[in-house]
Image (cartoon, rainbow, N blue to C red; front, side, top):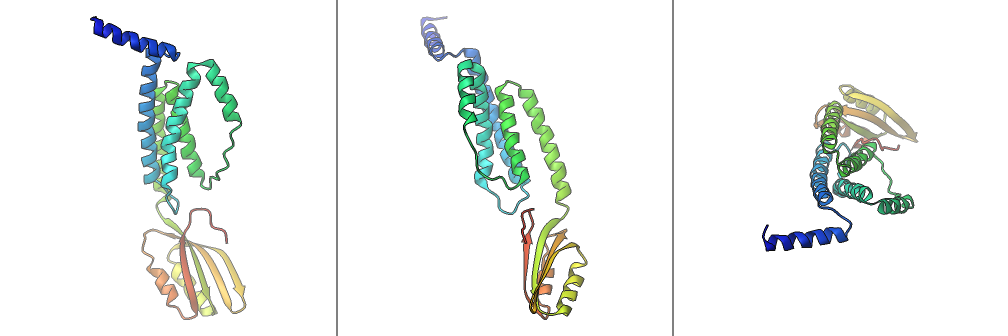
Length: 227
């Protein structure tokens, strides 16, 4: 070892010693953070590919990457110093998150990201990667099962009984379920849940063309419809 290398090593050891760190911990932290970014991006891509709601939120998808990295950082900090761990517990115990999670799948992705970050921070890299593979298989399996048909809510306002009978004949070719039927004077509001195997919605034009039909609305259903 020459004099130049000696001074470099001395400066590094002085820096990490002053911060209460070791070369081994710094190496572990770098590896964990890099894997957290990579696996967080994987969760981001999976969420985008298998999103089943109506409006995709890019902000929420980016949050998944941040959650993975931050939970990894917190786990590394807690494991490095007992004083920091007690401070973290005290600080996090008074934090309240009031953002409403409407879709249960969003909650799954959030917990998935946090769990992966904690596992990486604990140094269990193989467990984190295996869990990623298992979760991807589960999401892929149930996504394909769900996507055999797209669920829509059909809302039609009509004024004659004959129009109602014709509407039922048109939707009879699809898997359908009556959700509600409201009569207000001469106007009837019919709400039905439909499962369409394809994106072909030409049947809506047939319904609109019926005599007595005032309007017809088709809404993709994501489990949050309130009639």
